[in-house]
Image (cartoon, rainbow, N blue to C red):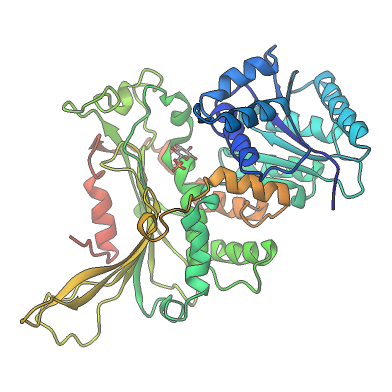
Length: 488
Ligand code: BG6
């Protein structure tokens, strides 16, 4: 096999994403022997720092066990795999030194390095950094490779996103570009493919004949925590709905791919997207949270507009529910609700499949409730089915109950890898199906850009909802109008 070095270059090494997510993830992979041997990690950022400084930034997030001497030693070994280069993002010098550092490793191993460039940098430097990589840092061929990893925001709307995609397409092949949507790395999102295509009793009912509605929801129980500046430029539609929730929707709705190859899967996802019309004003409810005077922390006692980084007249939504339709033979007429919000009553993400009423009901009117299949993405991963059974005992009443597969009781001793651990493993092994292809992105923007523009141009005032509530009532009303029945 390949004995040569891997080089993992982390741009934005001194930033938040690097210290809270990427460095700790690399450490966990190293600790669990999932990082390829001979991996060199090069941090790159503008600040004049050294490895010691960088280590100080990320160490507290690595959760190294203080009582475990072996782990502590392994952590030192991990730190020794790191080096740091300070350089600008848009001039040649830094990238020339970076390439020299990679070449030194290549000389040491007498093999060309596999080169992975992770852009944990603000979006305004995506273009210069990728251009500089392509100019100075490409691999030396053979069985080596170059991969470039970027995270959202991939543009602000259809036009800016296309500009970024076109820029990247000039520099790299699509197989070299890894666009992260970390929801694709979550255990239960991946499980959707097996649940759908590995079960005879699920697949035949997965259509408009049997399903009344599908809800994909994302709720967080915290607000901007005083740092609303970044959020205010995006809002919940760009931050969560257009990417994380749409990705889940496409996996729920896609036809069975010809194989599990990345291209077969992503082709099916794109076909779903092509069947979805852009969201219009009547298809969406937007909300913005207000303070909860009885809240038990500063975050909840501060309304969105009271965050010092948020303009006082901001109309940025912190909550949104949209109804989408997939106009094809399988899904015609079935509403897909995408619902997401910050500062709600709980932290939870789930997919809820609501089945239609039983035909020809013979029971006491009102006893039967609709069946539901729920895939709880987080927290406390689970798959459960709400269904009718006989209420135990002498009577003969139908009662709703659950068939429940809760992971922490069924799979007690199995640690579920974090989304980033899984995705970085995939990156290193070149498995691309959990990454977003350019055409998926293009369609997601096609579907959401018009409504984003309309809301901004008309200065549509979001519905207010109190921090810690279920969100605006108008959201329930929209879902109800489209035939959704809320279970008690
Ligand atoms: C990010 C959003 O993509 O996902 C954040 O930008 C959000 O606003 C986060 O909090 C949620 O991720 P997770 O994995 O904690 O559900």
